[in-house]
Length: 330
Ligand SMILES: NC(=O)c1ccc[n+]([C@@H]2O[C@H](COP(=O)([O-])OP(=O)(O)OC[C@H]3O[C@@H](n4cnc5c(N)ncnc54)[C@H](OP(=O)(O)O)[C@@H]3O)[C@@H](O)[C@H]2O)c1
Image 1 (spheres, rainbow, N blue to C red):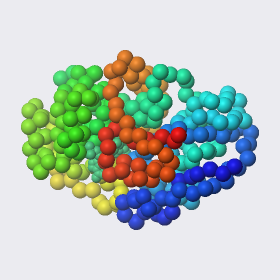
Image 2: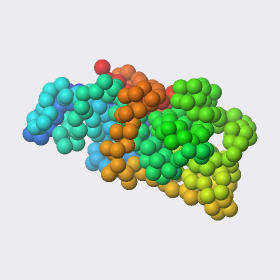
Image 3: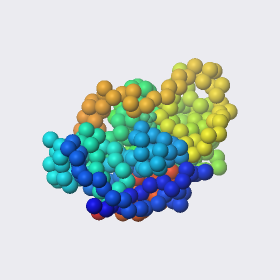
Image 4: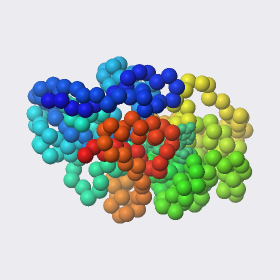
């Protein structure tokens, strides 16, 4: 049986472009014992794939041939594995293909739910769990504190801000553009949002922080971190979640205000979602409960059709659109 697949044609020289990808036809192997034939429904367009795409190296051996393996929600078309039946929805890592064969052990069944399955790849999945870990475990946000969040409209930042509001903090977002900032305040309920594209970004952020910042959740890199550091209060905490601005090059990262870490006795802690694997259930329960009560606001950027996946992925790396980027396969 033949199917369509998206793979890389070359190692990107600079920033990823759609011409680095190709849509091709491939022959599927025979389904073996322990395997599932899957029809992916939603491909998750995640920042962590940038490094694998640039280096053709990742957790799965396929990356050495430029074959993309990312997270998706899929429907079981045929099963030769106990516990999985035709029609089941599963989540796991697989290829950017219209049909895919995966070992059942790489997939987890999704229980029937009134919540959209796509959310399991975003605010109710790793994005939401990362936000939960950063806000509740690394920053330990609490009542009366002020928290700044970069990439505030994205799936991680949007949940981080909403969790911090639940904890009683005042939350100031940073986002690129007036439309994203409006979304952050009006839809997500942050107290304020500052557009980092404004020429006087530093002054505007200062004005949005009359009592300084106690906590900072950083997902972008030097441009935002360097602006926030001078505005932080003594003994403040910084959670370093991501470096979106720096994933597409290997240049050294420099900070003009690095000294503030010392002078203000700040703590900066990098963290990875994998460090909190034993807390995933707890985090997911919190996020599910908020979503079921209509208290978790989110946005999705859904692109339709496998052949559009390269352009959709490149758009995500450029910060276009508001919310979690996904490709829906019909
Ligand atoms: N530590 C972990 O375990 C973990 C797990 C998941 C994700 N992450 C990290 O969390 C961060 C947010 O992830 P996400 O999925 O929620 O992504 P996202 O917010 O949808 O996308 C990243 C955002 O970064 C901003 N950005 C600023 N400068 C940029 C630049 N030069 N190029 C591209 N984007 C730029 C853009 O928002 P604005 O236009 O609003 O600035 C963009 O939308 C990423 O850094 C990701 O790697 C970390």
